[in-house]
Image 1 (cartoon, helix red, strand yellow):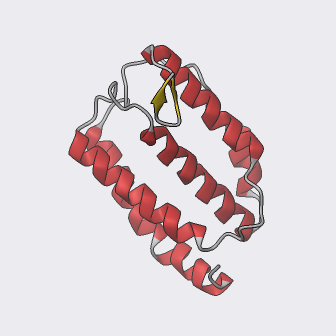
Image 2 (cartoon, rainbow, N blue to C red):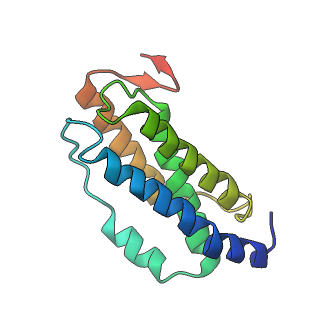
Amino acid sequence: MQSVCHCCDWVRNHYPILSREYLNLLDEMGGGITKLDVPVPFPVEMYRVIDKAEFQDRVRFLNQTIYEITKLFDEDTNSVTWDKKKLDNFQNILYRQFINLKTCVPPAIKPEEKLKSHFQELNLNILKKNGEFILRGRLV
């Protein structure tokens, strides 16, 4: 695990640059990632709570969020309507953020279960809507 100072510096100086890059890619790709309707609401309350938390907790939450997003993209992406090259760039940026933030999070801290559950529900709804059931890369 990196020192808190190094993590603070990385979060302040590098994270915003990468975030701008992937937000620009999202703007360029435009529209929804899929034409499928996904009835999973955004977890507003979780974000309100974490916004008031200490730095270390916010970094852990952010890292877990990025990890969960990357897991969504590890599943079937056949229904994705975005440009594949831009989507690859987007995924690479997320992965870079995850790797760098991961060095700032103590390994002994458990993941946020509510956040994990939110992404599991999102994943299940996307896969059910797509008519495919995938578990750890296998068709079930």
